[in-house]
Image (cartoon, rainbow, N blue to C red):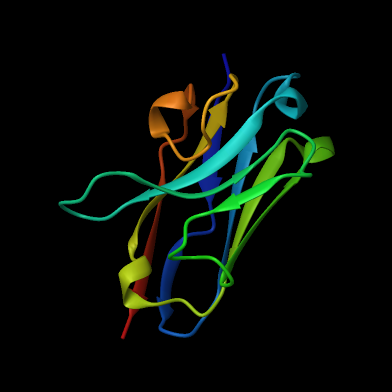
Length: 124
């Protein structure tokens, strides 16, 4: 069992930056790939970014490529999402998740554990 807690969300103006953090419990965190997803009101949860267990492979949705950066610190059992040049359409609840298997990073069904989410609101 892995428990995830996200924090760092908030209200920011368009063009601003935020850094989300996700703290994980469990001694096997460093063995797992991780991902960030987001869900806006009335929309499905969508992939944002993913990172392999070593941090050597990174994956991004086209909508955030060049603006968001995913990273991890296995010594701190944490994964991060640095968000820059934020747009109103980035407004959503952001979730981190654990992927234990070898499936696609882009598919939310491949993720096994989820945090409770943190709200990000970007004002125009």
